[in-house]
Image 1 (cartoon, rainbow, N blue to C red):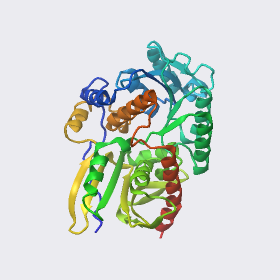
Image 2: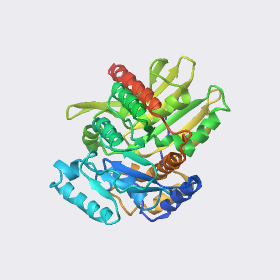
Image 3: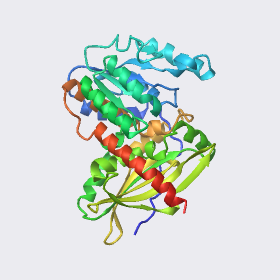
Image 4: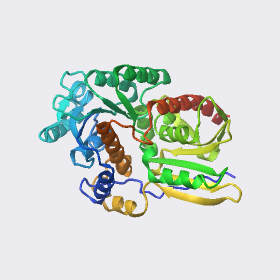
Amino acid sequence: RHPPPRRISAPTRLATSSRGTTGAIMGEIASKLCGARGEANYAIVGCGLPGRGMGWYHGLQLLEGKVPGARLSDIVEPWFLGGGKDSPPGQEFQKVVADWGAKGVAFHASVDSGDLFKGATEGPKIALIAGRTPDNPKFFRQAIAAGATHILLEKPGAPTVEELGRMKDDAAAKGATIWMGFNKNVTKYVTKGREALAKVPGGDFTLVHHNAYKADELAECFERNAEGMLKNMAIHELALACQFWGMRASNITDVEPHPEGCEVLTLDGRTDFAKIDITLVNDEGTKVRVSADRCSGDGCCAVVTDTSNGVVLYEAEMVEGERAKAVAADAAAHPDWFSYLYTQAVEYAKLKQVCAAHAIAGTTPPGVSTIEIAIEALKLAEYLTPLLKKKLAK
């Protein structure tokens, strides 16, 4: 009845050169989306180190022209330009400052430096906030005060539902627009999977999300993502469950863990999921299965099954076919980078381009998650985390 999710065939450690075939695919997708006139300015808040920071990778894509209709105006890096400036990683970050600064990017140690967006063009000013979750509410308010017209907020946005709600109210009071960085909303594999599911009433839909951490890297992973797996890695799938399947913490009637796909660990005093595999059912009988594993090779897939006969009707990975060949062809370029940066490179570029185009046009991008969905996803994560830990402890 509930076959285990298949192993994703994406390589454990993928990499892409900045000018390889993967970039060509991103450029093709972005060019199709680019229709609005003008140019949006992006300020990246929370850059991080090359090959490791999601903010850094967002900046790299903008700087290299992977996001038509948008430009990189500013980078804010509070730690490596602040308290950690003289550390070895801080000294490494100075290479980014020198390289990108020579290309016109302004660097700041704080969002409220007084100079954010000073070199921006007349287009929209988008603050892409990619800092650590506990810091993001402060960065969010500072960015709006500094003149950001739009916020693209990386998941989960804030540590708690209450904080995210306050951010929603603050943005509304200031007239700023918030979009969430749930890039799987704009993926082909999810869209096509939902289309397949619509043809089979009562069919099963499984969302699979794998990361490529090694077992001895999990302690650092737990520390860096202290909000927990369901508020971090698996929040993407929970957001999809909220947006497209109507799941809410208030309407869940059944949570079924599949024990073979679940593991809870305590490492260096922090307890979290190394992997999770659950089926959610709401009060309308709608169900969706979510499977996430930190140590199974990087990749994401969707599976649709006809429950009447067990036949798999649809099965696709985020990275497969020609795209997988393109990524694999570039795999040797940067083996030390975090692999999720480039396995999701197409979606990162596409989401930034969609948001830029709609910011310029003054319209709402279809399918992109709002902060309301983020709040519901966070509520669901907060509901499920203690419930699952209790169930799995039995």
